[in-house]
Image 1 (cartoon, rainbow, N blue to C red):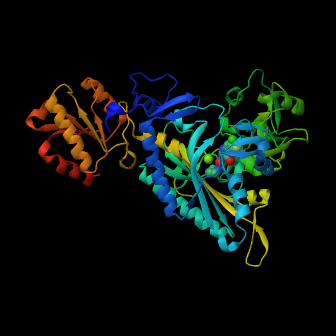
Image 2 (image 1 turned 180 degrees about the vertical axis):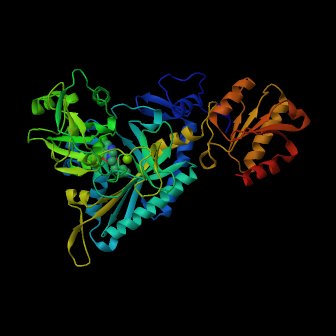
Image 3 (image 1 turned 90 degrees about the vertical axis):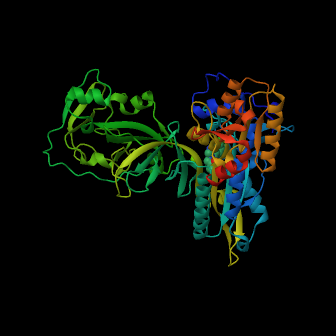
Length: 568
Ligand SMILES: O=C(C[C@@H]1CCCCN1)Cn1cnc2cc(Cl)c(F)cc2c1=O
Ligand SMILES: [Mg+2]
């Protein structure tokens, strides 16, 4: 393609709202343009790369045996009311009315649609298992869209749904798609880890997230420094690993602690370590007050609390609710002498504390020498804290380290939840009606594209891996006033295309500096420059990735490029 005909509006400066590399580069190189907050146009180069990412996904999904479909984006409220999500999804679900004033949702995901479709079309176990997938824009009205394509309000997703008459069959498909995802992210050259994850509101059991390691990732991955264990920190279990120190328990003592609020201030004031203090946090779990007690140097993991109670809603109690219930504010809470209405649960590590301190449930007072079971009772001990760096890896091999991750994929074993809610059943081999067992599998397609830019981009621009580069070669003619140079450039452009290369030909009447800047920004791996050396039969080659530069004889150009291709 001749660059003079293409819409590639590169920028010298970048809008200050673009905080991260992928957002800055995609804007600067003219790949995307914002229409509204979290809503983007893909310009020709962006669309070309997006198509190549889709192509890889299509190939690997088809190879896994999944069948491509296309489901509607506008979805009648009735099916979302049937699963209850019309009510449980807040403002994030975008809703609209049709001309008859009937309520619709804009597709945030398609469990309701696909289950309704299959309910009407599949009635026999003989048709199971099968997997349907689509690549389509999704709409989620994020509270705070940010980071460009990483968290948008309209974004491209590949979503797949599998249907089974047994959990063994679901396990097979889950593994097949796990492998397909691995091939997809390998072909994108992404540095990713598949991590054990939490299924969030989806229920079901096993789920894995595919995380691209990146400092701008919003998720934290806990991984072992020796084995391949990796889990989203929300999920990573912490073993009950303590033991009672052989210290004599002292008498419980109430002490005045005026104006000390934080755990550290209490520890300093009473002269002990953070780990000897008990942190008590009041939650509302499906509306019920629960006091969670953990060691002062640990953090409560609210996802584990939610899973412990199998709850729908877990939220922090407000200070006034807490004061009404316990009679004290946040800085003075503790498990000793609590009203019965409050359920108390504690992290495993609390049971091994001796002579600890905790809030006295009276402002300005704490207890010293607190003894679990002697001075307070918990309804149960559980794994309620976030794993920390240095903790033993849950698989028993090595110790845990942290990394930030961008979630580009998430696969779930859903079970029968959606089929039951929508009455989607099939007749099994005994003629008995059963709800479908399902799995669902997502990839953030536009997010994966941005993750590639995060991983490969540098301060001058992008660096596309082989399979998704927008063009194979960037051909720059530096002097459009010199006729024979233009003649040579046009001829090389034609020859390279005849040799089967997809060439972006910068034939614009622009200064060389502009052409070099734009070429670095656009990030096509191989650049050929027709400049002064042309009259002596040479053109200049530059490798965008390695920075390698050399003069290539025009007569040897084709072999040179063949060589490049072999080394790819
Ligand atoms: O999307 C999933 C599960 C899987 C992921 C893979 C592809 C199929 N769906 C989870 N999820 C996330 N955010 C949502 C936001 C809104 Cl507003 C909604 F209405 C529903 C969902 C929602 O269900
Ligand atoms: Mg997810």
